[in-house]
Length: 394
Ligand SMILES: *Cc1c(COP(=O)(O)O)cnc(C)c1O
View 1: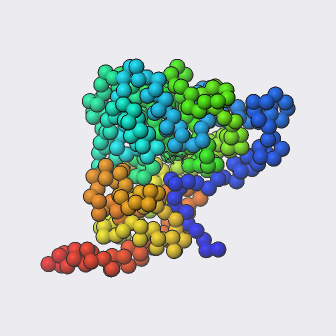
View 2: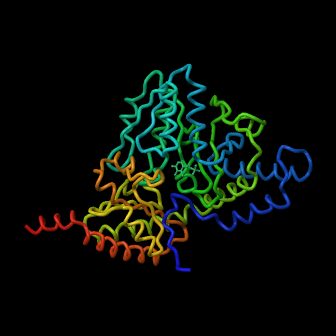
């Protein structure tokens, strides 16, 4: 098999072998239902508790504040819908941003149909929320602020501590979608004044289909799935024991390796960005150059269709992602790239590459050379580029 260079770690990651190994016994000999009372059930129950403790430790949270869900999307849905439900007697106004993941934006649209009023904050040209605009958006009936910790497309990290402080000063709940940030940047829920936080295992080398919502003690949140008494009666259903075990190990590993891993990733990231910007004309970096996820690179190439670039990269064994909403089968440019002010045609020519701990300098060099070749070829076929070059010559 041809070597694959996987640069789409924001979409999902490889499950770490240590994680798989830790999970296997909970499919095989330790298959008991944690709610039962005999011995093998006790083993499942103990494993779930241990994973919950591991995750709580990484966040500086209490064990009983971690509620397992079926992933990041469910955690986002739960946070918003249940907060709206529980606090609607105080008000119906929610503040979020234009660059959230669709799990937040589409939930907001749903809540609007139920009478919620939502303010979608603009961001600056690097994708950072403007704190003065956030303060101005606050109303007496604001019940919730939901701002993502780090953006999945352009990697921008928000001033979460400052946002948390503003929310706290106004006595408003603060939720953050930390799916891209958990395990990548240090997070402490007390220091950052976070009341609710969403996360997902498969973004940090854990298994797919398992996530959690952190809910600060004292926050009035109703149950999301009704049924049995699991997750402190707030999210019913027999626990995904192998998934939870895997998540616990993935979280521990991510925390233990964070410093060293992200230092290396930042170096490779900046090397990749530097080479592309220096060696390929007419391209730009999207997102904040400094307040940025250690593994995220997002570049727009003028006169290029992102989709064509992706397909040609795939033929060379490089897996990356583009800036259009290809999941929905549409070619609409990404809402995030539009929110940072890119014109449609530039947004269309965007490429996201997200590194992992396994990415090497050789991978990056091969990727840059390949992109140079493909961009050259695509531009040589582009009438727009031809026109542009003619004008340059005059
Ligand atoms: C991946 C992602 C989600 C969704 O998580 P799932 O576990 O895939 O449902 C939500 N928010 C952000 C920022 C993400 O990157």
